[in-house]
Image 1 (cartoon, rainbow, N blue to C red):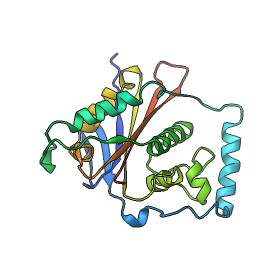
Image 2: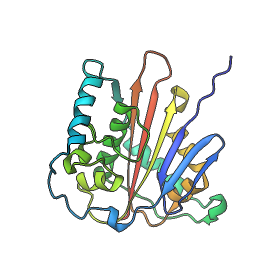
Image 3: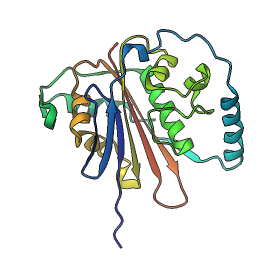
Length: 229
């Protein structure tokens, strides 16, 4: 019996689309400046829905909190090196045309913290979305009394100004646990290729979280944050 593994990918990108490429699902949109909060105004009063959501979350996890492991400890330099290697040569991004080699990105700890928080939030809730859960692991969303967006998360972690883009990926099993597998999958989509090659970005942060299961098919949640600041 053959076992097939699939990586699902979402991104925020200037080239908005929704398609399936080689059995990989991709979606994208581009946030406007209005989507990026210029400042954090403090924790807002929670609605009845949000309080009810917290109670449901507490009942759901209780003693059965999922086992999550952060895989970034010695990988940040490798993340940055591989991302800049992608940007160092011209690439044909399909329907979006040829992108010439562009400037390398600088690592941003603020964007890294944003990526790490979102990967943990997705893994904790078994949720694969640009929108945060609004629960305890969605700290930026809870701070503002909402479900977070990439821009809200970046601002919460003190990334000020500019536009924020995001790629996320979900892989199953060890074969899809490497940065190479995530980047190959992003580059396999025209829009994601264009997003990674975009000269507008100046900074990047990236994080991988492993959701451990009793079987060998652990889940790997990638978040990759770009910024123009």
